[in-house]
Image (cartoon, rainbow, N blue to C red; front, side, top):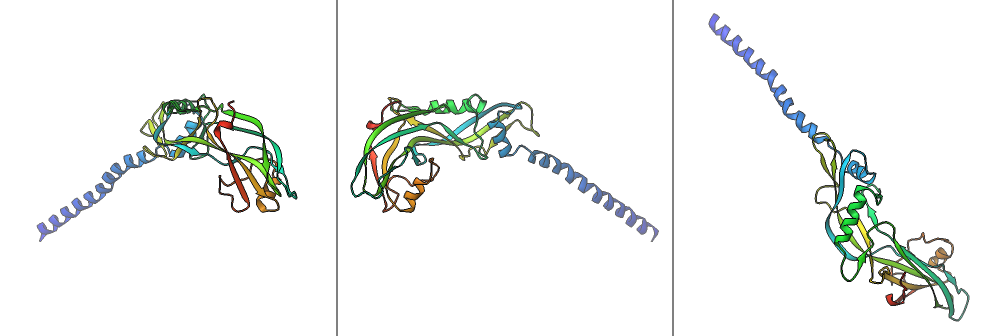
Length: 263
């Protein structure tokens, strides 16, 4: 009976030792996993790249896919001419001006300066997509056109010019390399490796340097919400519908690209 009691006590001690050690081993495995999970977030990478942070060794835009002839926002590029109350069409003189510039869309709205590491990367990517038919506006200096022309404004309408630039949409992701390890690694991606949510829009230019795009004369019926909205706004801040999308009270007439003078 005495021997049986001793054996039982010995086993009990071994079991207790085993139970105490098991959580320690598990914790030793979990620590490195938690350590790696604390790496820089995509938004932090995006911000560092956009601000050309001192801790960066390099930051580059990696293109994944592209689409040519992507139409940009619809912009009003002349002051409206009022022919309200008239029963006849009237010839009006318009001063038309528009500019195009490379634009960048990062996750959190930052735009990289042209002289930053990231800005230089955008320039190099733009060079990659140049063709013999057209070139791309690769930096943030921009190009423009401005001219005067005479066109008819319909009876009881207001008239003005609209413009939508053609651009090449190159989408991809950011790859940031840090000078020092950030919680176990030096290279990070935003939003992720192979992602396509970073967009760079390169305006397309014709051989003569004129921005490629669509220019049209828009006539809007007086007394309508559309006409009142245009007349009450002093700048092109309103979201305007695209060509042929204005509805029954709107008439659009496209101007041939050949009639847009070179800058």
